[in-house]
Image (cartoon, rainbow, N blue to C red; front, side, top):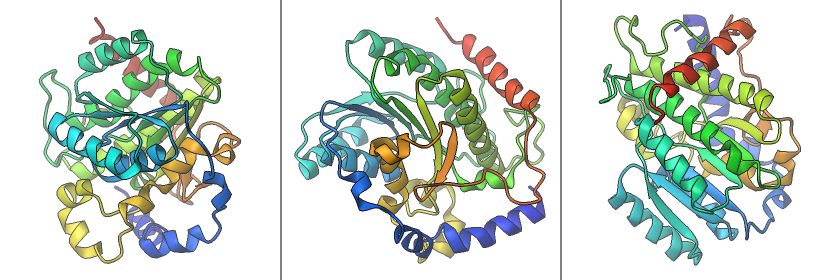
Length: 320
């Protein structure tokens, strides 16, 4: 990680990513943007049993949307589903079990969902992980990459046919401002060369990859509206468990999970978001730059193409 990038990013974060940053930005929000009725529209949210995913599920259910919760743990997922139904009065909340680090399972899930007769208007790729040691899945994939990058890629591309059947289909990828500290490295996607392994850097690389993926999807699938976003520094179970030292230092400045989820909800529901060009990166309902000034973090078209080709190639190994 460049010392320059990390220093500039942290100063930027203190100003923009904290609770006070959200409060400042929210003064410019148009409340009418979310005065919508989502009845008749279906939303799939990965990692929907806690944190930002759960807050987004609650907000969408409150607007009458059909919610498909995609969760790794059935017990915690069902507890969250019951809570969402109780809080919103919306009975149209459904739970699906899926581990986003297992590509074969993702292919099967997407195939079954496509063939079920269900519709899908919006896919919210929210599930993610930050594993702080280099850990391989049972498929031999580095776990951060498998979950954050490859899993997102497979689910998104496999559900495109279903999304394109609907009016104003959308895909939102929950990325992170931490990606600003990284230039994408397409020669070591699974961190075999990273010595020593650093989970924070691996996560930031994944989040940079997600932003590039969003831009590439927008070109590849023009009938679907794509966006990625940064939720800010929010107080979520994932932050507490994966970044305990950061949480302890920043806990009094962190946004609530609801504040972190605000832009996800806005991107999912509002006409204002859909009118923005496809492929942009958002922070607090506003498209923002994907690179810090003078940070030398931009990727060439060839590097972006290499990422997508590698993802397709790895994914194909697990397609039945």
